Image 1: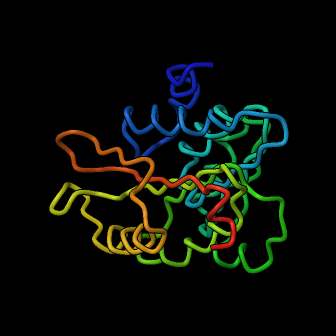
Image 2: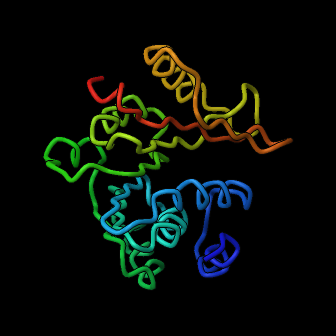
Length: 189
């Protein structure tokens, strides 16, 4: 499947990501399209990003989290065509507190900006070679500037002692995503 097909299949879903970001999200998630792969989407909203991930990782399983019942009613309806996805009503840190595996191959974080520091703990539930991708790492003064996301994620990259493996910003809008692969040497982090 191509990302354009995934976007077309998801055209009925209200979204907060651009076509370019949908393409990047699809292509990055597709790196993990294998039997038994597990993906996590934090911040379901109406389900657009979750649908892109579920289609990209069609041979795996996806869990998407959101605490808002009104959004989840819409998301469950929108995601009915994705048979490999589970929609869970919870806060990401509450789900983390009781989560006992399996490790995730791919994690997409697009939850509450002020709580992004709490979602960093998901790094420990990422398999070696897996990726965690954060949305809304935006340029200062950009259309949707989110200083807290930028500050928290910059601290994580500094702690790991390396730059982001993925740094993609929409030209002219300043809206972006950053991601890190969890290499074997970081498993003890």
